[in-house]
Amino acid sequence: MERPLLLGRVHAGRGMAVELTQEAFDKLLDCLGPDRDTAGGRYLEIRRNLVRVFEWRGCSTPDEYADETINRCARKIGEGEEIRDVGTYCIGVARMILREMGRDRFRQVRPLDEAPEPRVMPREPESDPEGRLECLRRCLGQLSPETRNLILHYYHGDKGNKIRNRKSLTELLGVGASTLRMRALRVRERLQLCAEDCMQRRNGRAT
Amino acid sequence: MRTERIDELLLVRYLLGRLTEEEQARVEDRAFADRDYLGTLNAVEADLIDAYVRGELPQADRRAFEWQFLTSPQRRSKIEFAQALSRVTAEVAKPATTWRALLDPIRSWNPALRFAGALGAAICVAGGSWLVVENASMRSRVSMLEAQRRDLEMRSQRLQRDLAAQVQSRPASEGPRTPIVASLVLMPGLSRAPSRTEQLVLDRGVQVAHIEIQLEPRDEYPRFRADLRTRSGKEVLVLGALVPHRTGDGYTVSMDIPASVLATEEYELGLKGLGDGQDAQDVGYYYFRVQKR
Image (cartoon, rainbow over all chains, first blue to last red; front, top):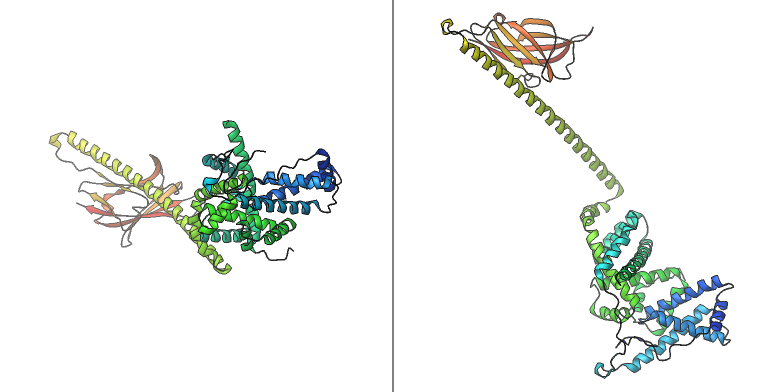
């Protein structure tokens, strides 16, 4: 399994890439819910949480680590291990992988001139700031005027100005600061998804 | 769990990778058990990214941030989005800042003061609007009167030119002859003001003074009456049943007064409108001075 080698950064451990059989995956789903739909929903939720944990901990490829965690859990279930809460168990496995990763990282710390040349250069994301800006503007244009006003004023200004803006918004909307913060965050997440989607379509057209 | 206070500084330290393994696990467990806590963690992460993008993080935090956040494509994408958002909010929200600067002090007023302020502002706006409308109406009226005055002056000059031409075309043997009619045109508004007195010159041979009064559109009466008095109030003449006649784009009332009843003096001419079966209504008072030579 070839992965980018990021010098001085977290990278995949040597003990990764556990194979997952269809039988083990089926048993995992059986543990997650009485029917496939329920189990599928729970599976996605667990995977999303795992990706978040690896992201929070600063891993370079959170998705791969999350899949690796699920594969290990599924293998344990396939081996007949009784697990009461798959979600909690998976988080435990993830922490074990993180510890392995930390050990690997510690072991591999060495002066740069002694480090081997990377076999695969880290792939930098497509950087197109103007395109991203255009996409963001387009996505903002799709919001209702109230929502657009909220997001633009909530995130406008630096330090002191920002605090004043947010205070004015709470007074204007008649909501508490934490409610306003969550409302703005939800709009921000929606906007980011929209902008990512727009960028993908844009890059697709360009290639 | 939900009633526990959320320590945001702890979340910042978690996101910068500064907690012990046990502390990290506690944050993660609570995040997956408590939706509010997860929401706050996401909000703190967004704020941290914004602070990085705006260069507001201290050097040590900046280094820790880069170590933790520049590793995964997901997080790099969040940073790029934050950069774009920062640019868009800076350019779009600019016009609002001036208004906000004006409104911010007002927001700190108490409700009674705000109400009074709003009322005052409303009165100012209403008063200002009324003045603007009134001013525009006045300007329009003055322009109209000015146009009428110019028109009458031109008519008067034309009449004088015609008169001069007639005098020149007369045989020399007849000698100079004085016109028997002297004309005076009185305009509404301007002539009605006692401060402005028109002049009527009556040369020795003049027998009739022809006075023409310009009517305003509102002076809609079938007939008029003119009362001529001296400025001291002595009645000179009353002319009734004067019928208005059309001239150009308006109406005038004209009258002929024997020169013999006029002396070198100031006069007041009162014009009254006569409706059907109604009392005479004041239309206006005009002032002129007669100069007999």
